[in-house]
Length: 504
Image 1 (cartoon, rainbow, N blue to C red):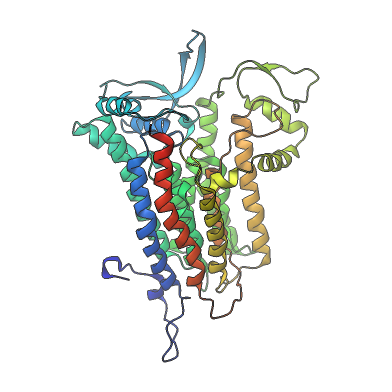
Image 2 (cartoon, helix red, strand yellow; image 1 turned 90 degrees about the vertical axis):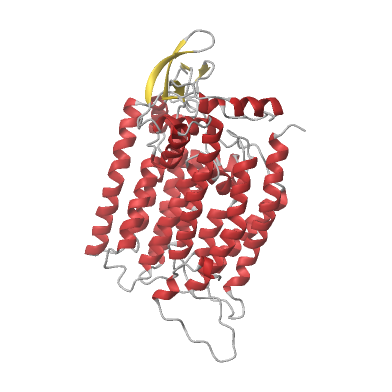
């Protein structure tokens, strides 16, 4: 590794194993894996993000314009969204949730939704957009419910650009670049401090979906990166000889980061169980559980406040009868999703919490492709070969991470508990969408996309059993599919974005 990237790696904290004379060192030390993964990240992942930040039209990532409005509002110090009465095009009134923001930031977007083409006229209009100097109500339901933890970098950037009298388009692009720069720093830090699981952590950071999010104003990019860093810190704690009996600084930092993730999106509060592992009926385990629960309190409090004072039914729909799962004899008419009515649907048959999740996963098999990367407004597909390469890369990365020793104190019970925990988080994600986004009584959950599950991928590296493999199969061999997938993504992904958005 060159001196320019001479980060202090984990291997410096531990003595290096000796190699017989005349043999090249085997690729198994955490420090060596860290260095290699950082180089891959810097040479293949970071360039892709920088390219996507420039070639993806402003507003061309899922919900990005609404995220930009949320960040613009925060740049004025507005932390809370609120409800307001608006009028639909037909004149009918409706209560909506949103923020006060300068409309100029929305005018800087060059696309509004699927099917929009970026033309030269539209680009000129977006570039010419000016700050209005006054803020108006912008409906961004359901983004108004989010605690704006991960909007802070974009908000500070927008405030700085506005202060030096540049245009909204400049603020939009600059905020993208700042978000991605922070993502890159977090990614390098995570790969440097981790003591195991480097390949899976790198895959999480390098998937086209995550790179696209990180190079945008969508908060999910930073949220996923922070989850990766939290898991990396937990691997550092888990390798301590007395990890089951202590609470280290790495543990405290990881729990705090996961608390921020839960504060931003409440379904991820289940990830706060990660710092409790390894499970044991010991005083230290009970203390870890208590502290993890304490980190969840702000998230639960915020979720309760947001549901009581900010949440509104969304999206508005033409009048419809409740679906076949409605428990009553008659099927009332609704004009939007209704959380209270959906609770009745689930209470009538509680096992639907599980069956609806499984049925919805089965019905939408494309969610696996979305997990890897269907970009734009979940509309820009990559070539089939790219998805196949990333599927192979994920499998190979799991093998690479399992060619090593298991953390002390972790056993089969912990493996099973982790699987249950991740399953419950998946259910929580689907049920949050069923309550807030799905028409009442429908037999399928509408709303979840593959990117919602990216924060769960790094969690799989916390508990890694040993996988005995021949010594000749070094871990570097299993990084090769990941490198190939990243190279192909670097070339193909920008071309797909250009082809999908820009008029021929």
